[in-house]
Image (cartoon, rainbow, N blue to C red; front, side, top):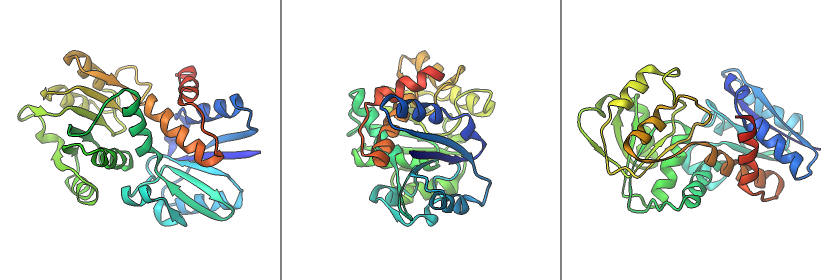
Length: 272
């Protein structure tokens, strides 16, 4: 019996990861379970100790704990250490090792759609663990220019200093046209209901040379990123592709079994 889980705040209960992994376990014939756990602020260390105590085989780490989980792990993969964020944990007896499959999952998505980010300019919205993973991959793929956009100047500067990119405050983005070949939303916001302020700001941005817009969220009925892409004739990809690709990578770390990402994708679409 294999037991896996996802640790996060109250948003873990609306995540489709539980249904996705449960369906894949069943489809490939592994007897197991995948469960969401809400972790209160300041309790992530105790939550990780529970993985050892309860013999949980692996875990996903959701917002807001992708960064704060680091001090409580025994080992980090090279990528997770550089990025400074973890979304997957593998337990080997009492040893917990952290990985970042968000990064490789994003790269898999670019490869799937045949997009070569080399020598391309990019804007990444967000400063959290997911944004760090995206900036890391774009830099590794040799994008020529990466703008990191956010509200908090200190958080933006910390990200670009640690990994790569040029800082830009959201409030300054409507003053003149912005040139970027690819735009990635790595924030948690995609609909006006979630943030009317963000929706209004994005609607005012004037883009030049944009070829692709990727929103790493999914399942939003009223998505202002998609509306912007559609209005400007830009190719749009939502977060299901990256979710399924990073899930495939996490699952392989836990089970040593490589499952086609389409199996994860099918499971997500069944519950959307």
